[in-house]
Length: 182
Ligand code: ADP
Image 1: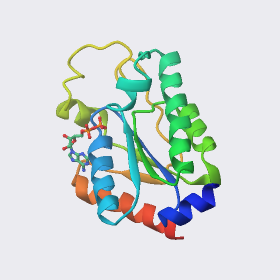
Image 2 (image 1 turned 45 degrees about the vertical axis):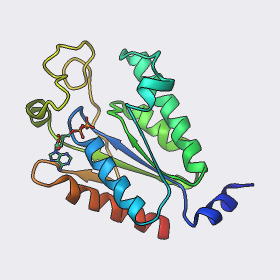
Image 3 (image 1 turned 90 degrees about the vertical axis):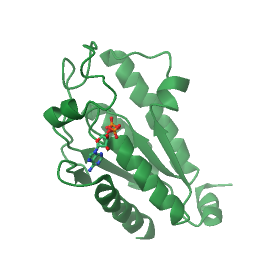
Image 4 (image 1 turned 135 degrees about the vertical axis):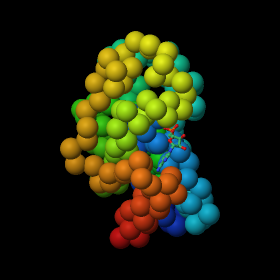
């Protein structure tokens, strides 16, 4: 059974929607919202995030440059498999390095990849400090003592400062529907 046959049964195409941004920028909040909207619209989805990846297949990895790259390499391979299975695959990781985001894109067939840059600035993320991580002095923390390479040509840039998660999710939903129907 090939990709086209899988898509025929699911009545959709596979897609990877890759959220990148600082910790606390809003990636997971928006991805969860988008997934709910897609589910309500009858689409088959899967969300890859820290909970199911960092605590599972990647629990052996830390946050050195080498481990971060390996983290994203494995996630890229997994996302490409889910896409090949016909899923709308949402991926929510800081993914700070351009080279690895490009790797993720290169793994997916038919350029079925939407990069979403959640562009919330560091000050706002630190004020939110959703998970209390910015105040823990964690080594190799993105934005503090590990760099974040801003995406150069993302398909979508989201401003979360003056918008709600629902408004941001709607922008992503529209791009997804345009892509898989187009
Ligand atoms: P990340 O997954 O990037 O680490 P989270 O989604 O866990 O970030 O946290 C983002 C926080 O910012 C949440 O507390 C969320 O309620 C808040 N927030 C405020 N406005 C927005 C918005 N427009 N989009 C997403 N999150 C927002």
